[in-house]
Length: 191
Image (cartoon, rainbow, N blue to C red; front, side):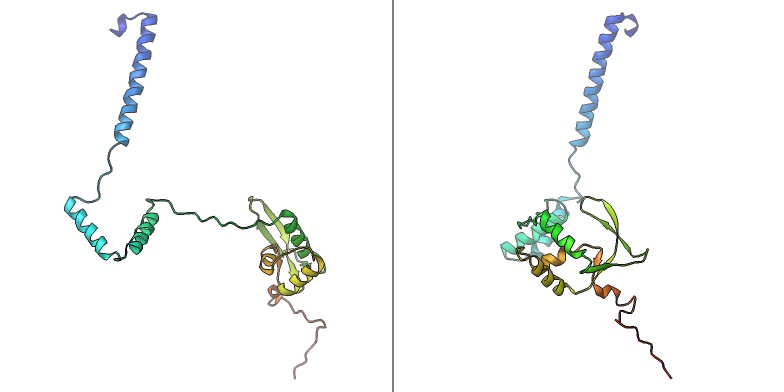
């Protein structure tokens, strides 16, 4: 029959055939995806037996029972885990820059001279920067007090001040195992 068709009839026949083939493929995909999930239990009795074991081991209190079942459902991915959004005030970029510039002042911290004294920092956007390590002269409490004296109009608590410390600025305890930090090096002679 296909051999007897002329040009326009043949193109029409091919177009209809393509439509039928696409429709058949879509129906086949629907049948395969709509297939009900097979139960992991072979019989209904084994399912009921497992269900009674689980329900008998649950707490008697309905609120506790609900909490246990909800936790299990979240753990196995049946329901989504709740995302707790904290509502806190965001620090301004200006404040972050002021704290950052305070930490890198030469009278607050000094830069290590060695070539190997660098640290690679990855920021929130994924940018990677290499910076020289800086050592703080004072501990965190003393630095916080100096910051408060310089910036009296800024209201900032000590924990936030500590969090805003750049990662390449490290406390002086970092140096304790590396070098001797005596003001005057003393030579000890042992007999």
